[in-house]
Length: 206
Image 1: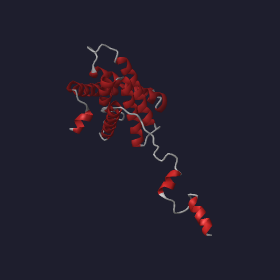
Image 2: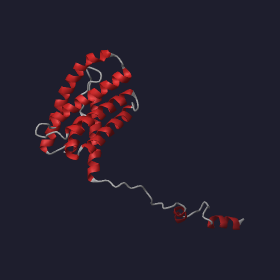
Image 3: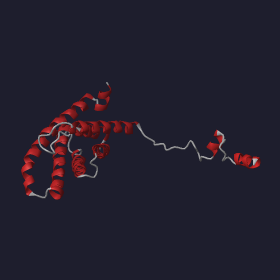
Image 4: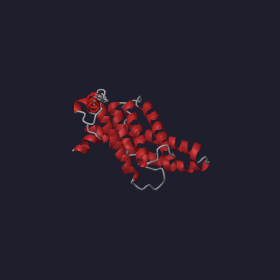
């Protein structure tokens, strides 16, 4: 009886195992996954978080017409586009769409696909707009073009999927006016941050 107990303890499976014995049975206990990130990655993550916060704020603002929103998160997209390029702006925009849908519980719901279609169309237009002469096409112009592309993508999804009725054409003037107004305002705000050499992340820390 004593011998069997001693053998059990010597084999390393007894109840009185030492700390060294427990660690020895764990293959490489110090192993962990490390991601090589850069300062730019951290900054883009913070910008995406600010964009998501603006989306939450936007959803708390009452809308006179369903689907008409100021698009405050587009300000962040324009700033990232100007400072880090189109690919970084696409990451921030798509992360904001996916994270926002998960936060509000409408992932893969019609609202998610409306936001995604609008974001994809606006990103496609911005990919072309950045090649236009910068003397004539700045943040305000980019913002207005992206706003019209955004509402065009959403209206297309609504007509082809949700409401296949020609009556939605009567809403186009209202959405176009909203795109022009909010696109201009968002472009001016983005241009203000760019001219001052600051961004919403650094401003929020001060």
